[in-house]
Length: 102
Image 1 (spheres, rainbow, N blue to C red):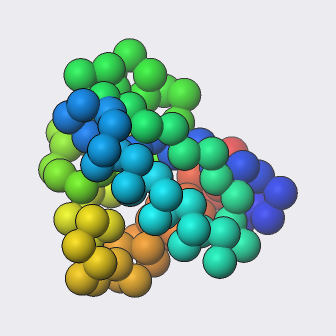
Image 2: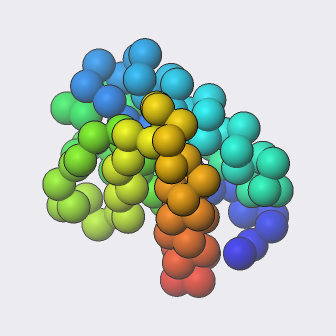
């Protein structure tokens, strides 16, 4: 994983505010503790198709179609905290895969 790279992550929910804000804050804190730099943007699910190509990863609390040519991680553990460490490891693995492709 490139320690200098700033990963671009879309935090997605229906309205693009409350849930995506919580995901963004929680994920940003967790990634910082792991030494991973990320720019996390809150995105409405209806706008995602228009902006997905601008991101390295899409993270959502609910299932999304895998139609964006960008890795998607969906897990309610980001909101509930139950299983969050496992979800974080999946997110980090996806970021590593993105880093290895470039």
